[in-house]
Image (tube, rainbow, N blue to C red; front, side):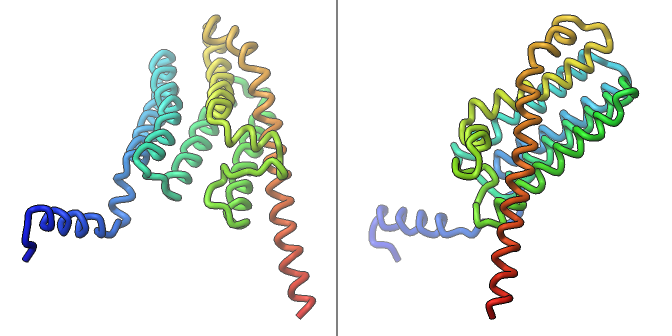
Length: 230
């Protein structure tokens, strides 16, 4: 039995601190809850697109994108960064953007090949980048060294630039959506405003794909060299 209240408190703290974390706990981490809310608002925006509710589409898609800034902040603040959360965040980003581009292909069918290429570039570059970085021993796909790529290092390690580029990339697609329905300031005007940063994002995707391919090929070369030397 503890001989004093301080010893009793120390014992309770020790026991509480040693509690093991279960998968159910991970699913309920604050950043992941924010991630689920992002998914819900994105799905609502898709339904609003289908029923041609432009203002509601803008609101819910905007909320889903805006919350992207808060899951990372919550992960750092509460020390709740997880592999599941990182993948959930990236998958949500890719699915939301791809789904919006799919709808744009209905509005602008003559550009169907461009939409297909953009989706393919977005998905392939991010998947290969994450796989390559994790295979190379990095804990996060955002740990890009300057020696690998100055642009990717700047893009992933500077949160302000990351948020700005991702935000304007989404804004470009949303502006194209609104332009079709004759929105000027949030549509036509925003297309030209966001175009330069959208182009930068596509260049970053190409560099990301190239860099990931090089990392994987280098790893394969080392593995095959070891086999031949045995």
